Every structure is written in C-alpha cells, then in structure tokens.
Image (spheres, rainbow, N blue to C red):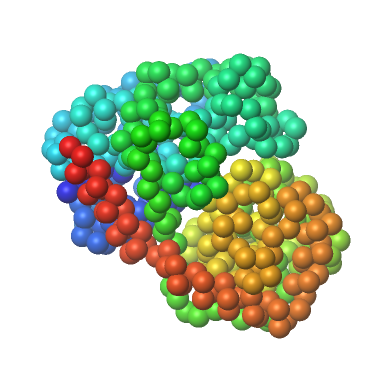
Length: 401
C-alpha cells in the first residue's frame, strides 16, 4: 500500500501538523511507504526516513500574505497533487489529509476525487463546518452556537481581523463545500474526540464513515514523575485569551503558586506583567517541551474554546502528571475529577484558584499522578498503536473500491 499524507506544512505549526508528522514517522517505522505532500517547508527532521518521500510546493503561508490575495482555490495544489496521483495506483493508495485550509485549499481534496482515489480526513478542527474553524466568537470571547455558514453566521462579526475577513472566510467555506466537495466528497473521517464528533456530526452526511483513532504521543514510559517534589503549575498551549492563558495567570497570582508557560502568543507581555516571576519558555521542539513538562506539579488546561483534543493533557498523563482542566471541552474525556486531576468551571478564576490550592497537598498530587500514569498506559496512545489503528482504517477504506 502507498500512503499519501497531505498537510499544509512540513514542520510543526500547531497540533494538526505535529500529528501529521508523527503519523508519517510512525507509519514509516512500521515499514509502510509514505509520501508526505505539503505546501510549505522547512522539513521537520522526523520526516527524514528511508520510507518517507517529501514533496513540497514551497508556497507561502496564508498568514504571510494578505487575505485578499491568498488562495481561496489553490490551482497549483490541484495540479501538483494531481501529477503525483497520476504516478500512483488508485486501487492501492490512500490519501490522508490533516490540514489544508491555510495554503493548499480544498482544491487538493477535489483533485483526489477527480482522480478516483480514496480520501481520508482527520477532523483536527471545525473547518468542515465553521468558517473560522473554532465555533468561537473572538470579539465576545465566547463559544458560538450559530449554525456554520447560516445567515446568522454570515452576519456575525466574530473575527478579530474584522468583518471583511469574516466574509472572506465565508467565501472560502462556500467554495470548499461546493467546488471542493468538502465534506461531501470525503470517503472517511477520523474523529479525535467524542466531544468534537458530537459538534461536527450534524454537518456530515448520515452515511459518513467516521473512525476513532488515538493521536500519537511520543513519550517513553519511565514511570510517573515525582510531582510532589515540584511546586510548578504548567500551562502548555498558545498564549491567547481564548486558550485561557489570562485566566490561569490571574488564578496563579491569587493562589500564590509558581507558574510556567510553554508556548507563545499575543498575550505574552500581558501575562509577564501579571506573573513577573513566571517562566516563559516560548515555543519549543517537542522533546524540549516534554523535558520542561516533566518539572511540573500539575498542568492547567483552562481553554475557553470548543477544544477538539487536549493533547497537552495526554502528554501530562503519560508522564504521570495530574491535570486541572476546564469544563465543556474534550479535555473532560481525559480527566476524572478527584482521581487523576480536577475539572473546574469554564472561565471561573475563583474555581481554578480553589483547585490550585487543593493541589498543594503532596499526598494528593502524588496519588493523582500515579493514577494518571496508570490510566494513560492502559489505553496506550503510542505512535506504534497509532500506526496500527491507521492501517486498519486504510485497509477498510480501500476495501470499498
């Protein structure tokens, strides 16, 4: 079997790219032949493998170009991917998409259908339904319950960059649905959480094939960390208001606890003013991220978003580190409050302060850390298991030819 993994980027820019790269590596390590097709580099070192061929179009990111001149329909992606598919056997090839909206556009998915190949899409975000990909009103700082691309949605000025950008996003969404045939033309979807699947299910056809595959977490089992010896509570996410960075900073200040922020984002200066003694690492390579995460007493995941998949919580569990997560997101699926962490009321600084103070008990965090570690390794979110689950999906999808 030939596996073509398609992603906007060949380096890590967000969770979807990290999963795409880790997935390609895991499949290659399992002996599968992988082509990694992307719009832009640089090429991550994990993609350097004898079983991986990287094809990059060397295009620019949508963020680097003004949105007026960016690609609603990337003709080059259609032609380039089509040329690649012309050299492959459609009866023995699966094309697996991760991210495509920033550069490749839905033109890349359309050419897969036009060439008669089977297409799989991992639902890393809400772009199959929502123009801004989050079901989140950035101006009101609240989750959006409007139907994606409905009249009310189109009228809603939910974008930080203004209403003209919102209209551009709606145009892209309409082109994606009509011309790109997304999601209608996708043969199979991979869901990464029950929470996100419930939100997206109404936007997919009744006959849509949806598989659940565990995202790969590349961490070795070295036993649970000695969390009781640490005083540091860690935030691992983008430093944005919607990610709850400000909520954590204020709560940490009120609770009088030490804090570390792993990641970068627009709130960094503001957070440094709230917590001048906190450590701000900036964005790190995955291995350095894990190294710093190991020094935590607990991690805090206070997102205000309809979070698709709380990968940070899984990384913490793999290390035997308890988590404090906000209610109303996929993070709830990975934490049993009072057992391996706590769930606090979304957006409530007071509730988070209370949970941080409770975590001051060494015996409690030690017990929770051990339980988090046990539960994670029983479920086993390893790259090896990820590759096995993916191959089951691919074989099932190809069986439909």
